[in-house]
Each structure stands twice: as C-alpha cells, then as structure tokens.
Length: 325
Image (cartoon, rainbow, N blue to C red):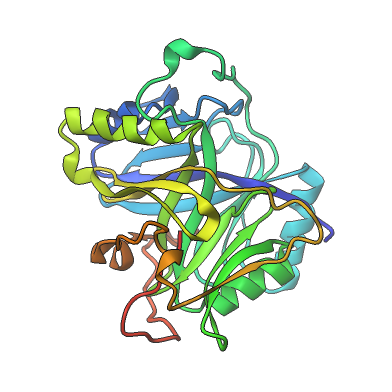
C-alpha cells in the first residue's frame, strides 16, 4: 500500500443532553481533556493524544464520524488522492477547524459509514501511572469500531483490498461472509462489520487493563442508578476470546468495555473461521444476547450534509440475526 493506516483513533457522537452524558462517561472513568459549551473531549488513561471520544450537543443522537490515524501527513494526502481517483467525494477538514486535530479528510465509505483520516493530534499528559485518576472502569484506550452494514462482503473487500486491512476472524456459512473482524494494529480488530440494516454504528470498543475493571464498572453504574444501561455481560466471546461488557449511554449509543484478545502481527497468521451456527462464537459461556443487541444501533450522518444516512436492508437474509463483537 502507498499509505499507512495505523489504527482506529476516535469517534464523534451527537448527544441530546451533554450534562447527562458527562455524568455517565465520567462514571466510567474517562479522562476529560477539554470541555466547551457544546462539546466534551475524552481520552483513556493510557492515551497521550488529546482525545479518542467527542460528545457534541445536538438535537438528535447520531454518529458524526469515526476516525483512523495515519502514519504521516503524506499518507493522508496519498490516501485522499486514492479516493479522488476512485470517484469518492472527499471533504477536507483543515487544521484548526476541529479542536486539537490537524488536517484531516472525511468520506462516506463503501457502506455509507462516515469515516475520517488524520495524522496529527495535539498531545497531552499520559495518565497511565497517575493512579489517583483510576476510577469506574479505568478505561485505558479506544480499541475498535463495530459497524452494521447491508453487505459485509462488499465492506470486507473495500477495507482489505483498498485500504490494506487484514482479517483476523470471520463468520461464514461456506457461501457468504456474515461478519468480519479487520485490523491494522496487531490485535483482533480495528473495525468489525456485521450483517444488518445499515449503515449504522453498532458500538465503540474501549480497552481495559483487566477483567475486574469490567465488574467494578457494573458496581459503579448500579450504585449510580444506571442498571438499565448494562445491556449485556460481563462475559467472554468465543470470537476474539475477549472478556466483554456492553453498555448503553443516555442517548442509546453502545459502548463495549473490552479486555483479553490476542496478537495478530505474524505474517503467517491465518484468519479464524466460525460457522454461523456455532453458538459459542457469540458467548463462550453459552448465554444469549438480548434481541435489542442485534436490532438496535446508532444512526450515522452524511459527512457533507450532516443529514442522517438512510438505511438499507441487508443483502443476506436469515431468520435469526447474526452476531459480531
């Protein structure tokens, strides 16, 4: 590839009540880097960059964009030129137009997901050994995105063939790919795609140090009256081997707290195939996810108009929804 995408880097979410969202995310242990009248910028304890999550006050909940960090400004320019040559409508966000972020550009990807690419962000103090700030889930860093799309194979081809992502695991019925986990950093995934009405953002995954942090997060949320926000888990996935907890914020955006996947850096690593009828792929311990976990996800915006992107039905049909993490 003529350009180097490093990792999943940040998400910008629209929320209806910024103060209500602030209470929830503070309870999880995110570090508040900056706040203004309309936005809050959060990062994890391990992160040395200004933010990995932005909450913006808006009339309705939505996903403004999900972003990937690149190795250099030259990589950003080369990738933008690649998209222009392919006929994509590239929207440049000049330096200074977004808090702490350098030059970036946005496109609507092959599935309609709003994605952004950048190389530079303002750096701040890392809180890794500032243990007095460890609270809630003790969130360390952003890990991945999960997107619900109408055609997983099409998304897979775009990210693997066009952008140089690699596949770690996938779900198949021997004829079609129903879900796929793709990565740039040497872990299980930076982005996953699941079959369903889309484009929508199913969840954002944040990495924790240990399993106890997930359990402590449940205790903290329950003590603050957020019992209904605990949607699924704690548990262990068969896919990825990760320990997980799924939460819903006050606007319904889904957050996964995540720990325990594995290294994928070796060039001879072979993607792991899961049969779509294998129940342990969902939860290694056997308990099923609630129906809303399969059916509900966050709507996404058009990068040019800011209007909500219309949903399309999936090309693959199945009596019971498929699963991805």
